[in-house]
Image 1 (cartoon, rainbow, N blue to C red):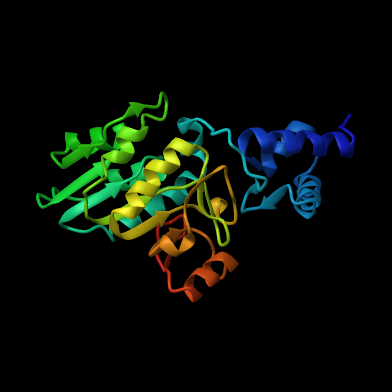
Image 2 (image 1 turned 90 degrees about the vertical axis):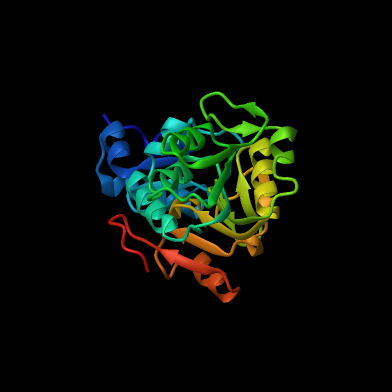
Length: 262
């Protein structure tokens, strides 16, 4: 016997609030209904301002201060993140200072950096990025501060102060949300402060986000969208956020899950 419509939609709201995203096929299996039925549920939640449909399901658009674990985030939209990271790697400078943020997509960027660049210094608050690049012989500066368990990112006033006096060619950031009015936002206030410090010292700011991050707003502000020089994403080129950013002079690079950039 299938659950009543109201109970089913209430359960979907809880899943969205907990995980940030749901898939049509998983919901259909859980409730014993067709994917068409689930899509109608999502349409109603979208009309209520709770969810937004994406390619294989829906995402929460209410914003959360509770951050999913790194391992869970790494698995979400993994093909898109790989394609985005490959496109970002093509934009990296050959020399000077490069800030690589913490986060799942930026870690993928580090994994795709080709060849040793002796004139490039990477500054990062990510223990994972620092370890990966140092193992390959890159010149790496790991910021000072306290390490967040599971995330293995470095936070705190010491991490923010690590950027003082630096002049970097580029910063590559991952964020939880990008909204035209509210700017770049993240789950954690301490993470956001480190990201903001990286923005302040960088000549160019590249933001790497999958399409599920567009139009979302989270607890901690990082920077206004005007601080973004290049956005790399897998969203459709005609996405309204992308159109608005182009109109404001932001360079937008779009990729698909197969890695083709446009």
